Length: 266
Length: 306
Figure 1 (cartoon, rainbow over the protein chains, first blue to last red):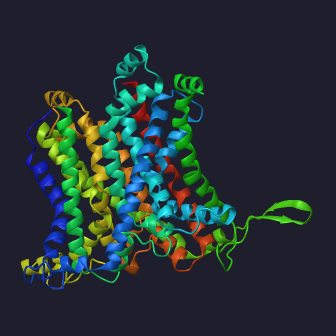
Figure 2 (cartoon, chains in turn red, orange):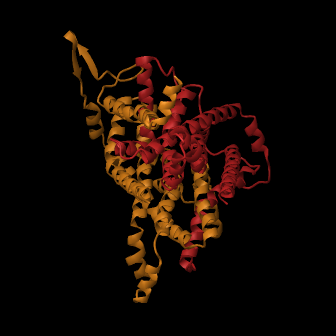
Figure 3 (cartoon, rainbow over the protein chains, first blue to last red):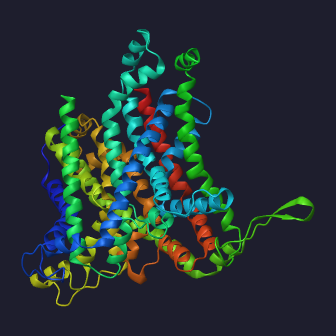
């Protein structure tokens, strides 16, 4: 139903998109400012990028974050896909509704509650069975997997629900076993959802501050934790430089993925 | 052995593995932790790690006693700071949700009305900020809203104001931050329900003599209500427990419950009171979460039926 937009709607949209993008643009512009003051333009400089590369604490935390995000995204895709398959394909089993509610609950739960709850679990488990020993990359990965799998489940569930069942039926009629049907038919068909689920989970994990702060141990600070503690002391152009790098990487990644998925479709 | 493997492959028992593994994970790492929070909210503070007393205790002759200690809840009830922060969280979250709705609705409506290729681009532009770091997007607002920030500098240059406004470190800044960060969560469900509307209904309303505003109010708005409710819940629920935005933009003036819980846990190291705060926050959020889940279920059932 494409119709012409009224001037009122047009203005609303322009203002809305400006609201979304002006803050991001200012971040990028002032990362190239040679002044320490973030609001006064003093000339073009890339010195904040250079100092960023020499910040060992920051680089170390970035490495921790990348490791956690890769692991958490992978686990979240596996668990989320299994959960979605169970919810869509197993019919009406007992406790299905409860399971459905549990899988999407982490999505809306305030992170302070989930973080506190997980930390208490880890402390309790360590006391009782001695696992996990201390807190660090393992516990952060578990926390992020739990959060991200909710997003993956919703994405994959939507994709599975709109799949044409006759393809799977045809494979079964031709003698394929359930596992074979899943790997040869279902999995390739839902792969776009798996790719976007993995990317989303990866970004969510890379971005999370609250959960990580609760369940991280000494020496396993993630990148958002380091950024947060430095923002608390005021603004610094170095953080702007980091933001610019992250935003550029994400924009390239999202557009690349979008282009790949789009190309596959046609 | 081979026969057995074949049998397993033949049967549908394998597919129940798809159920058991994620179910076990979510029970262990989501359900049980909440029961522990509940348990600890009833225990007393102790020095040491973990800093709380046991709830279950074996007294002589193997009798298991459950000690329920309501002091934490009583403490929260008597200190007006907590009550105040609950109220303030709710007010801020509701105002933030209204802000998202006011900005998001016309945008979603405009996207739904745009031509298809352009629509994809507009949608992508809404989603893109959501993929970039949440923390850094909040950080951007510090530079904009501070006394010597971009907004004040611009307004003073134009001559609208003569002395800088102090917006940063106030509740207003927190609300702006919430509207900014949660806007995509409002627009996407709104767009989803607006896009499904059959707009010939609008033409019919016009033919019957309705003015544009009337046609919108009587046709589009009621039909988009599921999207409005879903979007509002998606914004309201996490906003109530928000920590980063009030901490960075709200200053010491803004007391939101997520921030109070954080301080209770990290600064005062009072785990039982932090747990009690979490339990009370959950009670506050049970109704909106239930509404959200019902919409979610209805939507999925709709998808399943297709």
